[in-house]
Length: 364
Image (cartoon, rainbow, N blue to C red; front, side, top):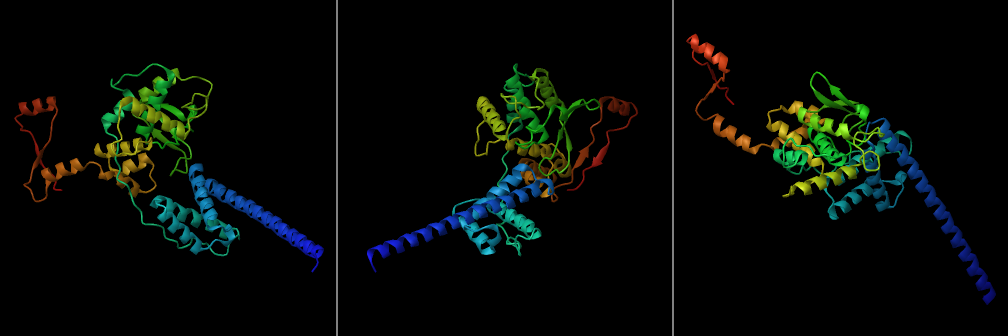
């Protein structure tokens, strides 16, 4: 073959390869557009129909996008073996059980949506089991530490200035209402009402996590006092309750920065605890159970979808369990529980010659 013929054949071969690459690139871009269309429809379904929050839907989407990038396949070609291989890689990489369980839940939900829309013939996540659940020990703040975050070293004292009052009112509301870090920001001024009968403020939470409908949360008198002081000096012009320096609602990152700043100011050390605003939510649940609230009431206040979530906080008062066992052991001697009477009633019974009543203690 002559040199000219070889050059012509090489040029023709190069042109064919270039065209194949262009066609492959166009197909890849089309697949990406199709995947984006599918993921947009699925996440919109999660928020509008299933009642998931924007944060939850976004997290599921990121997990699925990482899965697709790892296996290198479009959604329509995704198989169970691909998902299991991705889960093994996550395990080897040291990712926790919550991440891997999130992948399983997200893929199963996406598969159901795609199956209903005819995108796949079989749900690749159907019957897929995630790792066994693991719950880290909850280590809350003490009541004294929470009091320092709100009041500082002078209980009952409130500082002057809009910013300091905002920070303390924010943390106080998060604590007593058991809010997540993403929930204070969307609260509007119109969502805050004064309950004249109880003498406290109440907040309206709209589309919060684990609550598909609006829910009122009552504050106590101490936190209502802090919130009232903040409302008196809060700058006007914004519809949001907790406003950033730019006049916009506080974000999750802004809440985190405020919490970190207050803990540093008060010298509250981590001591093995995960120091984030969510520890205030752990703390109020633990403190309510320690104060004698029944677990069902705490579940309602914390807005837990399952009472099993609330049971985590029963770790709580190990000292109280020990004291109860020492005092009220089933194998110990029977004890009588005295009924404490008011002073006036005691004097009246004394005049009548009636001794103080005794009520047998209930057996444990």
